[in-house]
Length: 223
Image 1 (cartoon, rainbow, N blue to C red):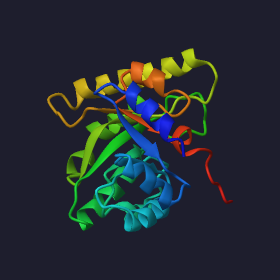
Image 2 (tube, rainbow, N blue to C red):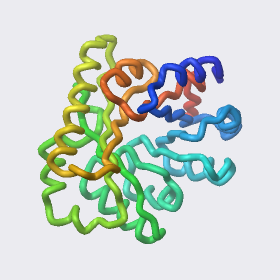
Image 3 (cartoon, helix red, strand yellow):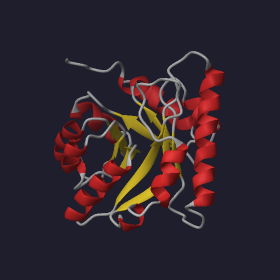
């Protein structure tokens, strides 16, 4: 745990950008330490791991799901998740809506876009997303709330490429805002930027940066 780095990152944040501390693979004790420093937004990428931590940690933590979400795992996080960053298909949004309704909630969601040059990344293409937003199903989903967009840049040392990809996501956000969410004050989030590239993401308009290893240290992968 690098508390000094945590405060260093916090000092770099403009008022429009919030830090999500990515705590995946880290024990609840580490999260509690950062909670004690005032951090409230935490990010996880495994539904059952998030549920287990939610049950033993303070209830005012805001849990952000940032990983690829399988439809059969939504049930674990639907009762409490603060925001799902990784909506990458209409079918997933339909299932989140179904579980949100079952839990008598409206779940805030971000639309994930494929902006990287890596085929392993998930996300909508802009035309696919437009088709969903213009379709017959989307207007019927009353238990989800679309609050913005999310994307991951290519894993590369070429920071100009990273900047182009973040700029592209910002352009996508502006296009959707104009075309589908004009006047909707809740559509305001751009989730982009991680440990290696968050300063560029901030410059390109990120409202959520997702930083883990810089704060918590290397991941604890058991498998």
